[in-house]
Length: 198
Image (tube, rainbow, N blue to C red; front, side, top):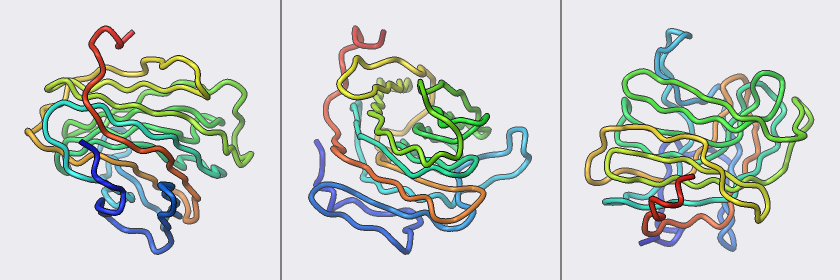
């Protein structure tokens, strides 16, 4: 099901990026983000998203790392139907630490956070995190893991999706430019078993 990374394309291509040996590296532009309305009252849709179209149910995985230094620095994965309906998940600096965030957007964005053990704010956190997103019809699940450990369920949510959506990796930095993000082992395949949700 996975197309070669070379066949994927950018939404809001950053000026600095490379793709070599299956490893994608990108550097974010100034004040980039994906967010709609909630709490802040503004909409931003200019984050960097490297993607391919995928039809039907799937599981997408990637290993994500980034040189976080600033509040709201983000690097992770995204599933996008359109500007009003999408999911993003991954590493984010918030509440004084690098955490795992998940944002579901259905006209309005919401966000949930989970801590990463031992992470600290503004310390150039470069630890790698495995991310996994699965589509089951109108349901999306998000899992993460460190190293070769077990997958942990972060989110199960509803999102009205067309038959084909864009799937890939994303990065953004709402309060600066220059976040260096790295994505390895990106792949898309059949959905995991429903028994694997726990």
